[in-house]
Image (cartoon, rainbow, N blue to C red; front, side, top):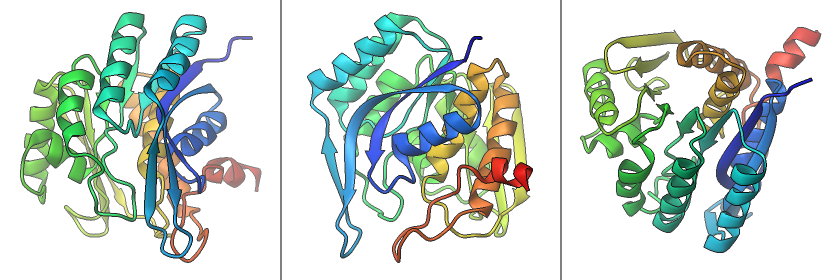
Length: 270
């Protein structure tokens, strides 16, 4: 029996809703074997939920990369929060050296619940080192505006323009995600492959608990690619997965509510 193998290179969310925790839960739900390279640890102050970000030492990140890339391999992988320019460069070097396929870049720039850009210089490093050769990049509106170096994105035309710029930076496919900004009450996502703009429109589902939604979406797409789906097929599956996960979201405490990664499975068990 052969199980598709997936890798996430990302940060740890102590609350369990985002980061490698969300990725591993999603991989498990979608029938692939998940592996990790830990780049940062994110903790929260219990009184205020202010985020604290602790980067992992560079030599430790490299040891993890060598474990998976040289000792195991993968069928598809994704990145999340990388934490520093040095880590971005290191990850890029090892990915390119491995020559392994199906690279999904989730260009995490902020922790949900804060408006602080963790390290603005990371954006330039992502553009230079990660986007060239990426099979898919999955920014939200804010991340897309940073990568495209545009102002705030407020229309479908601006989404298409940003997708074109990001594609020109080297990504083979660009998926820009929006939840109710372009069209209130609608989730409007755009997939661009350099030729065609494909729109995915759905009603915003409503638990309101969306912590980890971006990580979960990119992880679900990565799982689909590992199982042999095309990018378009994997995006459709990822959209269906996150829609159910958000619908099943729940309050973890008074500050945050994650999506429910098991929602699609629990629905089928009823």
